[in-house]
Structures are given as structure tokens and as C-alpha cells.
Length: 352
Image (cartoon, rainbow, N blue to C red; front, top):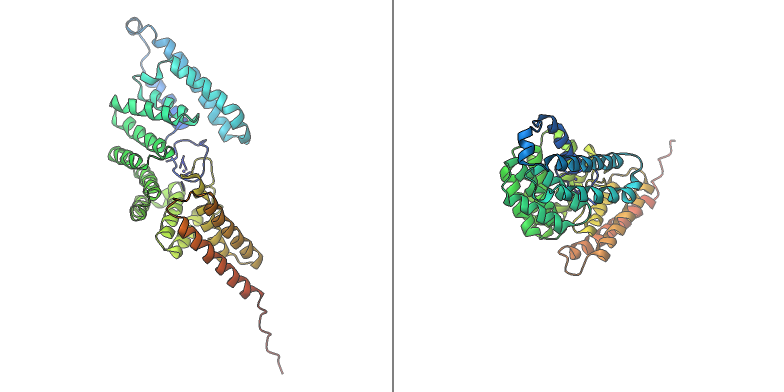
């Protein structure tokens, strides 16, 4: 998995389109909330500051208009009318981008403005533009909290572009600046995803376990579920199918209906990786099902998901040979289970 939990599979935004990989830390909505909360602390402009920077009021007004559009977009993402996001959302985002650019956001002295501008670009699909904006911000050497957010956002952009080695280095930079345990857990889990994308399964497993070790029991509900799923896939790819199934069962004690890996805050890299997560999820469900019909259906869904992965993955994918082996193993297990279920129960002994 991915989602931004990405976004999935750090959760940077509650309205990030996704598949399960890489959740992201504060995205547009969170950065906007921080900016609005901090606004009252800013000193009112004086006649002297206006004289030094006559355009400051105009820039502030443009940013305020743009932030109002972002807030409306955030509310729409949280509403039941989610299907309207793709229709209306890009219009608001494009207008917000125009307002930010008119306000000089790409070179603003306010790091939060530049972070929000980069997030707007990423949401609009201009990932290269977001990378340029974030790299420019980092060259300006903003305060440590802004650098941590910028490195994290940059890592997610690198993931979207398939630049996994640079992504791993960006997470190292973010980890060096991030003091909060939950945020560090998300960074470590996302970095583990990058290692898995490169085929370094040992580093991936170690990264997921390091992420889980930083979380308390309450944090597990918010951050641990997607990490457990990622670890499950990594364990399976290391040859430990039983460990993978067990970690999916544990993840479902916190999130019974798999909402976190199927939510809007999560994305898969590569996109077809969703089929691997689905296959393991259905396989785990098949083994846990009490009713024979439910078990049969779950096995069929698992086999279909393995076939989907094999069909969608390119020929040079690291994991296609294992996916083929898992498909055959799952189908054999399905057939054996169905034979046992069809076998008539022994007749009860008659009393004399």
C-alpha cells in the first residue's frame, strides 16, 4: 500500500485521490488550517511596512481568496457529494493556483504559502511543477518544521514520478528533522514502501517494523493499520505468507472493513499494487470465514486479484513470478477447502 494513508499508500490531505500507498502529513487542508490558525498572531501592517512593501496588502488579499477556495474544496471532499469533487474541484484548484501565482507564491518569503502552492500543483497533476516548487523552497532554507514538511512532500512527489532512490533520501532528510513519533512512523512506513518498490525487501520489512515500534496503542488506530498492511505485503514477498495473513488479521482488529487502505488518503505505487493487497486481503478473509459460501467467494476473489496483478504488471516487475506461484497456491488451497466442505459429515451413531 501504497496512499497519501500513500496520499493511503503520510496523510497530507483528507481529500487526496488514491490507491493504498503512502499517506502523507499535513497537506493542503492541514497547512491551510495551520495558516488560518496562525493568522491572528501576525502583526497588523503599519504605515511604515506599507511604505516598504506597497503590494503586501494586495498579495494578502489574493492569498485569502485562494485559501477560501481551498477551504471550500476541503469541505466538498468531506461531504456526501464526493462524486462532485472531480467535476468542481479542479476548477477551484486552478483558480487558487492562479491567485497564488499572482500573489508571488513561487518566491514567497512565507514557507507555508510555498508549501500550499506546491500541494495545489500536485493535486492538479503537475508533479514536476510541485517538485520544482519544493526544491526551490528548500534552497531558501526555511525553518526546520517547514523543511521537514517540504522534504516529506518532495518524497511523495518523487514516489509519483518513480524516482525511488531520491524518495528514500528525501525521507532521510525529513526524519532528521521530525521529532514527533507518529509523524516519524509515517515517514518510516512510506520509506519502507520505496524500498519495496526497488525490490529491497529486507529494508522494507525493517522499515515497517521500525515504524510500528514508534506507535502507542492509540496511534495504532490512525497510523498503524496501513503500516501493518504494508508489512504484510513485504512479509509475503519475503516468503512468509503465514506472517502476512497474521498481520492482516491484526490490521483488521483496528479497521475491520479495510477503510483506511481503500480511502481517499491513500495511493498505490505502482498502481497495480492494489491487486496484491486485495489478493492477500481476500485470502485472509477466506481462511477466517465461517460460512462455506463466504469462504468459497473469498477464495475466488483472491485468485481473481492475483490474476489481475499478473495481467497488469509489466514483464520486468520484481514480483510477477511470486504472484504466479501465489495464484497457483491459492487455487490449490481453494480446491482442497471446497472438497472438505462438500464431504458429507459422518452420520451420528444411533442409540440402541
